[in-house]
Amino acid sequence: AQSVTQLGSHVSVSEGALVLLRCNYSSSVPPYLFWYVQYPNQGLQLLLKYTTGATLVKGINGFEAEFKKSETSFHLTKPSAHMSDAAEYFCAVSDLTGGFKTIFGAGTRLFVKA
Amino acid sequence: EPEVTQTPSHQVTQMGQEVILRCVPISNHLYFYWYRQILGQKVEFLVSFYNNEISEKSEIFDDQFSVERPDGSNFTLKIRSTKLEDSAMYFCASSDRGAPTEAFFGQGTRLTVV
Image 1 (tube, rainbow over the protein chains, first blue to last red):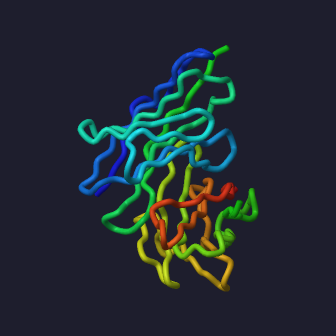
Image 2: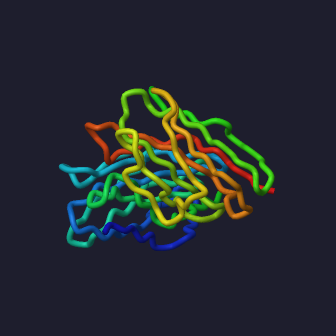
């Protein structure tokens, strides 16, 4: 069965600093991986996805993530944080063994300091 | 851009009452899902629906819950007798047969049981 672990429930960075949100996955088959962002009192917005092919994927708002099979990781990065990036970020994997449901990590809340 | 639409955005109900949460998935999608997010917690899978039947459900999805696709466009989640612990954000999602692993999420319905 697939699962996702997000390291750090809270991450705080200064505006302009590098954002790094960590995600490790467990999967018995090649995974389909996603990052979602949730702004306060809003829904889930897809930031980026990895299915097959290029391991470095670019998403919206300047975010990117790299799929590293050897490390079973899919960390999310952004070179320069902006105040508007403050939100909850969820790493997720698609369940390919029992259906197509999305399995979410616990989430990481990103704080951006001025 | 096509999107998943959920109504209402916020619903308050008394404990023991029945509620129906409504969703209009993207029109050519064939897989439908409901997820739940209790305040401050991660997003949890409830149920998936395909070909007019439940394809998978979690242990959360007990006899108090039911889903229905009453016509060609709507997908509903019914909670028969609400409990305080049913208070949460409920997300509907849908995915295409060609890319079943990529689910598109609605903005959610916040259910408050008082």
